[in-house]
Amino acid sequence: MKTTISVIKADVGSLPGHVAAPSVLLKSCEETLRNSDILTDFYVTRCGDDTELIMTHDLGVDNEDVHKLAWDAFTIAAEIAKKEGFYGAGQDLLADAFSGNVRGMGPGIAEMEIEERPAEPIIVFMCDKTAPSAFSLPLFEVFANPFSTAGLVLDPKLHDGFRFEIHDIKAHKKVFFDCPEEMYDLLALLGITSRYAIKRIYKKSGEIASVVCTEKLSEIAGEYVGKDDPVAIVRAQSGYPAVGEVLEPFARPFYVSGWMRGSHVGPLLPCSVDEANPSRFDGPPRIVALGFQVKNRKLGKPRDLLGDVSFDNARKVALDMADHMRRHGPFMPHLLPEDELEYTTITKVQKKLEGRFEDI
Ligand code: F6R
Ligand code: MG
Ligand code: MG
Image (cartoon, rainbow, N blue to C red; front, side, top):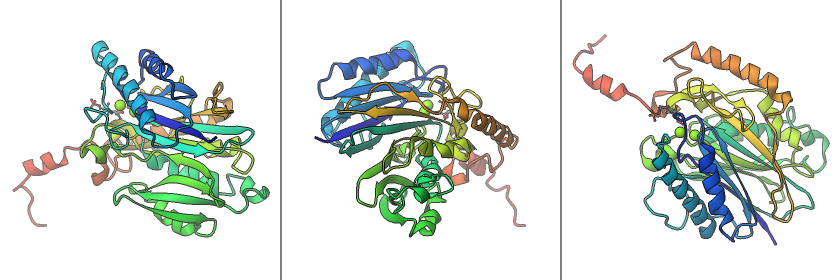
């Protein structure tokens, strides 16, 4: 029988402001999931202000019952958040009622169905204060950069490379690339992080290797209602990159969009779940990683992977990068390009200045 891993997340309330999802909300979600008989196992956690449901079952991806369960868990938690006065209560629940699938209703989703190997290491990445394309650089490195993943050169099981499914978030289209053969074409798109993002990665033989949540809240709602704060699932070992190869790109911090008001560029800071409390200028953007060894659809106890001491230096580098970016205040490149700003007063200011602009 196959195993489905569903990671469904939403910001349904946090405190103070957009810093951290309170444990009472996580406990409420746990209770809702525990009272259902459709899951084999689950683990509820958070990254910053986002509540994350990690679930295993045998119902396949996009299953209505699983999505309804996640929706119910978030709705009940949002009620508590409203009552307690938590910030942004129910923020990511954009629809009034569930209609078959949480896709397009606010929550973010990453799901994969697999044939479990005798030992199945799975890494669940969760981000706060950033967008789905934050995964493009690191996942490209994990599955295509031999300077990062030694196995691409050394391991006969990885040597053929991987297939990338890329989504054009604006045109709602997808395209596949084989790597290393089409690496330069792939990078030509992926570098445009405002438009293209990795959705899935496969082995050349067809098995799924990774999936990223690419729901874009601002596009769904037609206006700013919160950052996407994406999640991703990655399989590791025995024919896939090793756990350490999957984590390696996060030891070299890089810039992503989504800091303060979804309108600034900042470093993606790797940290433990406990340290995912984005408080400096509402950030910097965070990434956490939990490692599970899945067996018979049981998740077992997770290991907090990016909290390890070996990422201390990356944290230091990322904080220096944050200082450097903050030096720019309201200027680019800290500020995102005009058409990517989640908050802006530019139209208002332009209107006010109508008639004052003269020909040069
Ligand atoms: C939310 C986020 C924050 C908010 C900012 C303003 O995850 O990225 O930086 O955009 O705190 O929030 P509001 O408009 O709710 O006061
Ligand atoms: Mg928020
Ligand atoms: Mg968030």
